[in-house]
Image (cartoon, rainbow, N blue to C red; front, side, top):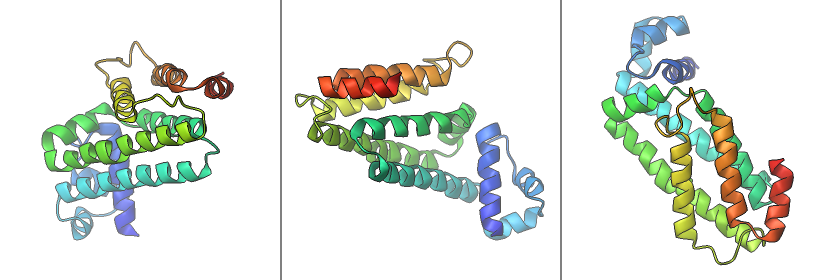
Length: 198
């Protein structure tokens, strides 16, 4: 119970302030426990960061699996997962990702693996589903289109491509997703997509 509270608090603080700017003392104080108690559950900050990030990735993976089961078709599945990612990005300070890359490269490798194994695989499966349902064009090259979509998502989340003071994240995601769906959809798929995209 205490361990879960520490993890939850640490993740919340990392998402707001970045990883480097948060100390074990800060986490202990925010939890209302001693620093010694934090160290009883986590050997050091590296261990806490690693476990916290793994939990984030696991939650994300679980959501994507559930979404496949509960969505009535490929387009609904795609739009739900895009909304989920957008909402998650809104609560994430880009400094956290920068800190992970710079100060915790081993942990960052897990993010890169998740992007290639989890996200890219999920995009390919969604394309296959949409083609089977007759909502996406049969002529799509799944490997090319999936990679294109992944690059599109990475660009949408990149503050260098879409600076926050000039672009609203929700609008960027809505625009790139509408462009993507209407580009891969059959006539039937486009009609369905237009109902969701209004």
